[in-house]
Amino acid sequence: MKVTLHNLTKKYPGRGKGAKTEVIAVNDLNVEIPDGKLIGLLGPSGCGKSTTLNLLSGLQPPTSGRIFFGDEDVTDLTPQERGVGLVFQNYALYPHLTVRQNILFPLQNLKGDARLPKEVMEQKALEAAKLVQIDGLMERKPAELSGGQQQRVAIARALVKMPRILLLDEPLSNLDARLRLQTREEIRRIQRETKITTVFVTHDQEEAMSISDQIVVMKDGVIQQIGKPQEVYDQPKNLFVAKFLGTPPINVFAGQVKGGRLFIGDADVLAAPGVTDQPVFAAVRPEGFELGENAPLSCALTGVEVMGRDITVVATHPDCENTAIRAIISAENQVDAGADTVRFALKPHKVFLFAREDGARLL
Ligand code: ADP
Ligand code: MG
Image 1 (cartoon, rainbow, N blue to C red):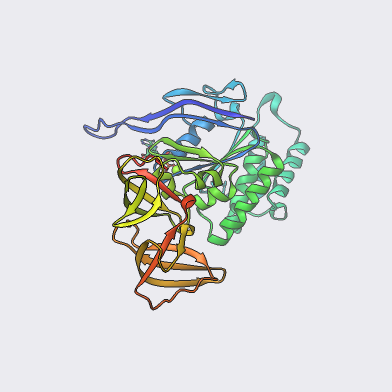
Image 2 (cartoon, protein in one colour):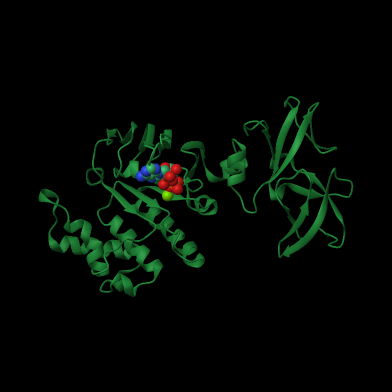
């Protein structure tokens, strides 16, 4: 099922005495989610991810704009009528019901013609449980399950009606690191098997990058960029997106373009063809540095971390806004950890130039 958000806006009124400042949680969103894909909705806390999901599910009405599932305008339909499956951060299972009863619940709630025979309901519950591999735990209560198992039950419950759209709001946040990894692989597998169009909300860029067919990066209710994870990483449209994606984070230098060259301090570091003379931010991915005795960018060396395949060179530079520059280079390089300075050349395709004023991409 293709999903289209058309000029979607959600405003919340200001609260309290004299609070006139309304919040624009979602600001004129236009997104087309292709059928059968998993979309990662990514951005910092408060950027409007949950609001977007609530609008998609029908839990909240938009202030303006329309939502389409396929060609059908669903904007005025209830969550039940839309046929969405929802999973939240806190599993929200019924504590007094068993796993089986929890998964059955949405089916038992079907009314009239939609109601299924009891054996069919049981069969569907078992299939959903098998899909998330908890079919061996059907008679347990939620309190007798681990966090990861509880979240699987929540996913099975969202899948049991075979929703047209699956919506997941930070579903892994309550799990420990290992379970988080494992469960995200599971979600990916289930999504591939069922081919249900899925929106996965997270503030964790690594999670979104690893699981999504496409990511939608948001800030302050506004979409910053939409694309395949690697495309967005390789071609960020603005400084915000460049800084939001990647671990270790991108290294941001205050620089200057003069006569088609990028200068950091007095060092002429790179060609900047077609960029007019102006102050810029030069953002360098950790893998964008190369060592060289006569390389242009001189930094103060603070440490060398050897991690098997790679070496991380930790350094500082007065024009870099990161407290520590982290440069990842191949372990084949020799780095004298006792030296005071280290000199870098920059790989052009790993350096992005942004306008100082508004962070828009220049090169
Ligand atoms: P996210 O899920 O990305 O953390 P939310 O969608 O929850 O962000 O919130 C987006 C913005 O809308 C925030 O500024 C938040 O404070 C505000 N907001 C969310 N829900 C409400 C509400 N019910 N009333 C007023 N403001 C809200
Ligand atoms: Mg949220």
